[in-house]
Length: 361
Image (tube, rainbow, N blue to C red; front, top):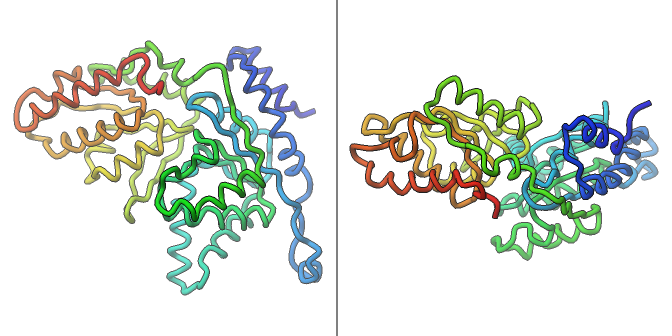
């Protein structure tokens, strides 16, 4: 007999994989109506019944789980997705999913489709019965104008949606351009989805990082081992998937990402012709960045050094937690040549970002 969500959670607590948390445990029953819905046969559409309008899918139960960073939202959603079994499903970072939608819209418009959203949304609905989105946030006007119709069509097709977010629905796209046009989507979330705040007792991500060494030098085998340990702890040993962000029509790729944690080398992010907008998109998509193999900086890699400064500024302003390995401590990374003086500010920020409470805000 398959274990229930509560039983699976309690088993992980007993083995020490999870710390007991009353708020997390209390949220688990919210997933049960969705599991029950998914365990029923999918409705058949089309044919005479479809023409007569008698095969309209059952309205799917949906869940919007929000709360502070590191409270365990993604962990609970992952546990739920596992329990959904063989049901056609996708578990995907919300930002990455929206980029896929935009790519589909572009292709549909190129084919001359008048309402490009219809075939794109219908293709998703034909492929899955469950969409599990991690870290829903709306920062782009094009997403804001699109997401309401997208969710409405997916739900109408019987797709159950579960999403995590750091924001209460009323704060989505806060102060955004033309936000009044986005408000109906907020009302739809509150009407069609169970909205629940996860008020967990501990910020588990911050708990794992508080007081820990997060800047390793030199970037040798010992540093790589520590980096790997952090990745496993923060992602639950998940190998991660590439996170592809579309910025002004270009793809910005973080090689590995899971649950808001990204992993890349210095050359992945600073050896490419990226700019402030690209690094801002990365900072918005991640809450922790593991950056490996920062080299000594000098006139010989001046362009890469400038990009590194811009990346650190974006991470700093967004309060993204940084775990890094480098050739030397921040103050010794860039000691001479053009740009060395300006780097003192970056070194100071790197030092501050190592603080035990960095990112706790």
